[in-house]
Image (cartoon, rainbow, N blue to C red; front, side, top):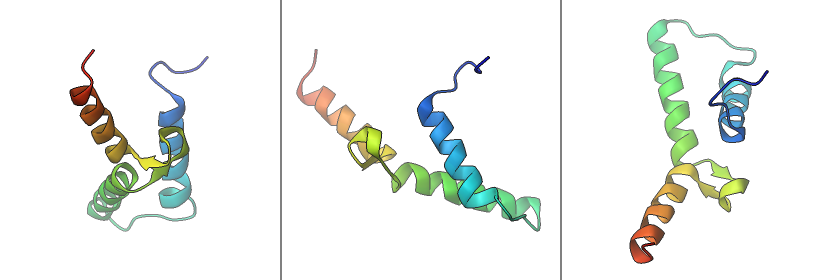
Length: 74
């Protein structure tokens, strides 16, 4: 049974997170883990392109949608 609130986008994030940050490694301290996780999330949202968003980064896609909504209100 799938978990509620889990979407393909969420699954994609966790798959990348595990592959790029966790597989085969460990953190030396809790502070290092927090720092690396924070950096990864910031990179994922601001720079990583997503094919389902027309190859825009998540943050850029969000800005594009807001701008479009302002230009063309319903």
